[in-house]
Image (cartoon, rainbow, N blue to C red; front, side, top):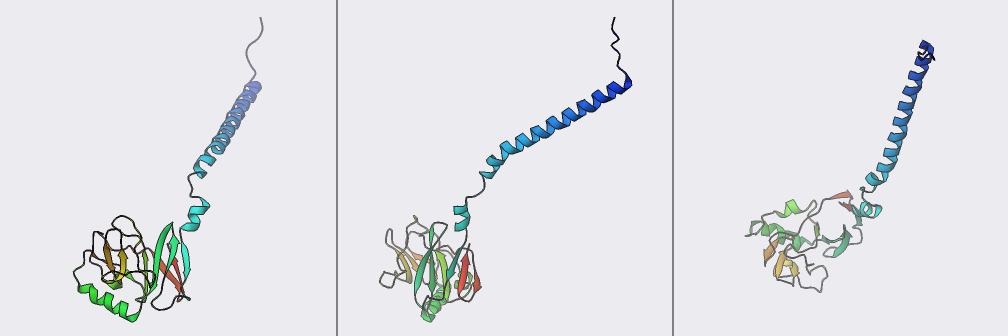
Length: 183
């Protein structure tokens, strides 16, 4: 009959070998799981196209007093207007008017001469007219949405028509006197 007992040295070698195999198998499994999971997790990050649209810088140096431009931010039109003294005075005077959504002109601008707002009517998402000098500006000298007749004042506040809210002011900051970053 054969001797099935192991010497103390061989049982130590077998335990070391077993521990090595367990750790090696766990390391390979963890590496495989990470290699499998990484593409899945990475696919949830925003694309480079979306990241590029998250902010927009606008050069204000070429905009004359009384002129407006439209830029695109996150696929939306943003109205940038350099207001005249008369437009600023009218907007401040209208702070005391009967407004559907109470908002002072000073709360809508960082610098009174610059009005920056998203150019989408808050009624049904149309783009109001009034950016060009030849377009109708509505009864209050600001913007007019011809689709359903919403009238906005020189601060972009709703004054007449079915729109429930003022034109939205996006987050923006002045990088210097002639440049803003929207977003």
